[in-house]
Image (cartoon, rainbow, N blue to C red; front, side, top):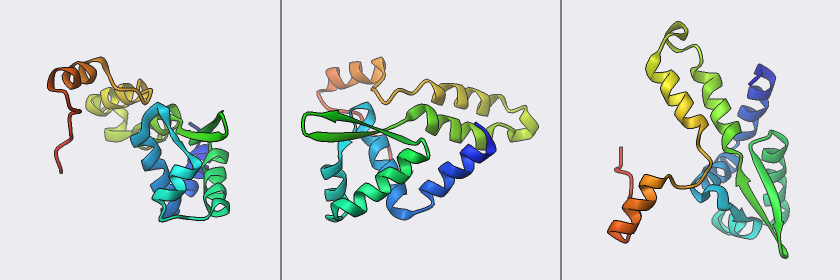
Length: 134
């Protein structure tokens, strides 16, 4: 990722509403969420306000949209988010941090779909695994 691309992405998520949208779409995974569902979570934001923020995120290359019937579904672009993290962490420890290099490589593989091990654990326990609070 070039510096100007990173600046555009950081500018887009420097707004509280847009950051909330990106985080919401990361949680939604590759399936994404409709514009209406996004607006609802944003405390019933107007369609024009929601559309403005979604367009800013799309312009920055962080989200994409697709039409499903009468709905427009928005999804995070996981490769762009991975590139943004890699941009920040690339030179960690003067570019010689094996831990960060492995983390960046793993994050770059994220597709927004559960991994096979998570699907197996969910099938065995009959409920999705939850992360522990930090």
